[in-house]
Length: 73
Image (cartoon, rainbow, N blue to C red; front, side, top):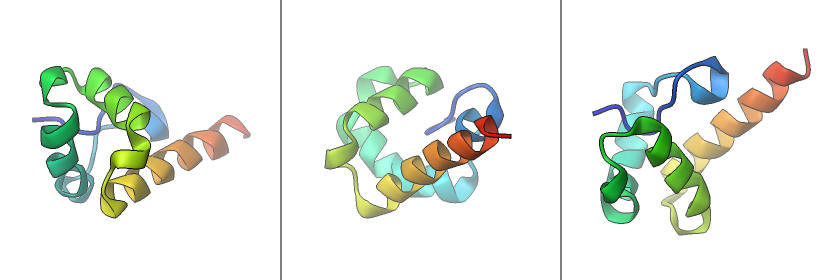
């Protein structure tokens, strides 16, 4: 399962095993109806950001900040 993942770029690159581990419980709890659509899962996690575990919130924040830095080059 490609959880917390989309197609391309820093924000949207495939999730690492650690990122998947951090977000899998939240995906199953909050976004399971979107499995196996990785892009929809990621959008769902962002939409439910305040309900995420600390670990998954960190992953999503890190990915979003990485996208901002990549876009500013």
